[in-house]
Image 1 (cartoon, one colour):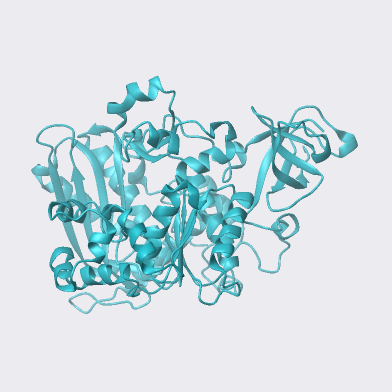
Image 2: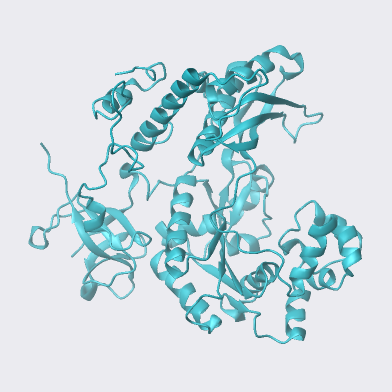
Length: 426
Length: 126
């Protein structure tokens, strides 16, 4: 038996924890660079502001209805997310942190087998101790917990908890019929419209597909697994901490569209440094690097450029990677355009302990070890004195690429200089 | 001492790091360096979190401001350690416009409790 715990409007809820006066008012949190709304309060949703709404299109609506908008405060959201995971590991060690605001729990080992009562108490505890509203869906498969969670959020009568575990099949089917197929786990923005074109609308329609049809429509085995999960047959186990990363990517929109090669190199250096830091934290090294540049989508004929690097020796050293990317960038005239966004993706990851050789059989050990010590020193300094304190020089070539963060709230929980203030009354 | 990393920016941090004796050695490595994630901090050292934080998930820090209350041991500028999972007599509450520090028993009825104060931290000027 599984539970899915999903925070309601997570980023907005984090902002409201330290600004209780915003409860009951329309609030949105904007993506990096303040481009579009990535988290909306219930009140903002009721105004018809869709997920991903570009700010420039909705500015008038925001003004009319006094919508409060925040630039993303990702230090705050990360810290609140960490607190929730900490609380949940006290509840059960059988826990999969699926995303910043979603966790799957395996309930079979739980001492309290009255799952609804357990969930109601847990929900109250999270609200009391961390100040986060969450919804909890319980079901025999992860796919069904997502449906249960969706219904628990949408139907106010359910009080934020829906347990499909001991429900008769016909009642489960009514919940499936009330769930649009886009809200099914594993059906994203790509698959959704294709299924709609086939006349399918809800989770119930997907469940009632024949296995053959499910494979055809939703891409082979994965498709029939989605369908089985909705029928109550578990195909996906809980993936606890051991999930091995396949890729690491970091991307950012530039503060302003830019053709300045220094700005672009600074962005790439910084993104690569961050991706490599993630690699080193997980003890991995990359064999391949993919760099993608994109022009402004809202302007006609927006350009794209990408470059793929195969590394002879797996590495987590941003210096090595940046040097090669910079060379490739400078060499190709097609890369000299006005860019809006850069993405760096590291792939083909291997554990860095298994030092492999390049084609000629060389492992330049002394150099590799010195490089590794240098990176460990950088990581240690940044852990101690704050992320990004010690940087590669190229990261500072230009700050045009740094995201705009017009109205970021204080980093209430991660910066001694930005703590919330309380007035002494006593 | 190997100065391999001084080519990067942030020389003040690097200098401070060298002072801790656990940077990059040419001789024997520090045997404690493998034990701890943060080699500059011994796993045996006293950790103030142990003393001040009972529940890491629900403990927050707020800065206090306003009139000094020496009779309660509270001065403006103090840090309040606030645990939302605890229930004590001294609380942080939201009064509609701001957070206030008050006794639970004296709270105006329109104020709602945000968390209980479980500690006060003050650094003295030198």
